[in-house]
Length: 250
Image (tube, rainbow, N blue to C red; front, side, top):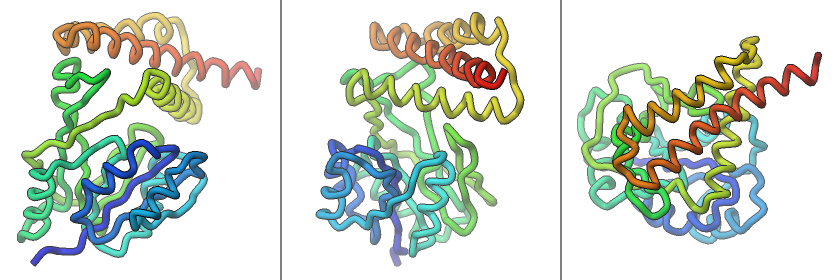
């Protein structure tokens, strides 16, 4: 017997993605968006498609996601982002594993990352995965940015992949990286970490070389170079923002 499933998402100005996202999750018995007061038509479109939308001011990713979990009626949760599209094959596998007698309380889903219209196969993206299916009785989120599911129990892996279309346009992608850098800087500030020359000069360079050379990002052509460059710059931005936080109080 198929258990009831709740699909959750956190949203902010995602009007371009809402329809396709909701359609890909039509197998869910309940879909809930926790929205951070979008100024576009995200809420209007979602509600027209039968989505339950709750408004909550954004403080950090984990709190936003954990609040969403608390609103779910069902134990089995699928928690994909609006730029992740569930394929019919992945849908079938999700229904299969949640319907079976499994000792897993959560499942990793591998992601096919797309950037500038190209499927990125290297640069670390080849092993990109995240827990996207879990039982809420045994799982919660931790971390202010790049938040992760903490699962109390066995975690399995699904075979099918989700398509991840993180790139909408360059400004949008860069804004995402800026937000991540800001939140990471705030985390470091709370830990009393102070930036120095190592963080400004060597950490960004290491990030670029790790992604572009060691993880074979150069095999993705110009798209691989652009990705490595902007991610390296986001590391520099993280420590610049951290430095500015200390400057404000000194």
